[in-house]
Length: 191
Image 1 (cartoon, rainbow, N blue to C red):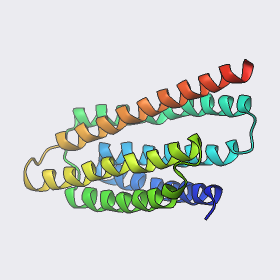
Image 2 (image 1 turned 120 degrees about the horizontal axis):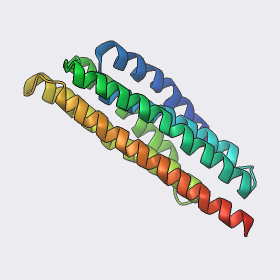
Image 3 (image 1 turned 90 degrees about the horizontal axis):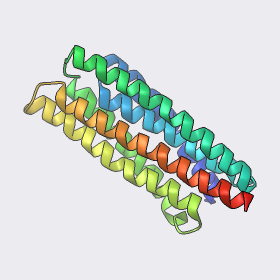
């Protein structure tokens, strides 16, 4: 499968699972699932941008990257707002649904990483797409563990809230990295 086709497939998988996680997060009141759903939306956007950027000039690719970085901050704000609400009403999410949906996310991200692994050395865009899928696997494992911790050890909102804020911080860092890379490309295009 070509890199472009692999990235398109990963984008569609991410977009579809965004919906699953977002709806479940709203239904069970999970900050970690909401943050991870935002990450799925971010990954879908990044992968679609990569597909579009394959044919763009360096300057337009840089501009698209800066716009995407700004867009990535909006879902993080939604996650923080949800976390604030959870602090005011600290009810633990349904642990079984949390772990099951986290396991589904793990399957999607492992599949995505496998689709991209053979292209990871092709160029920077390919490596970025693969690293994103690979790194998301760790967030999914944390969500699954959060469900187990909530079910068997700490029947509290704190494990979910902690993992959700950690994922939101990773997403904010991703926005910063996308902006920094886009700014460097813009300077290179003007040089």
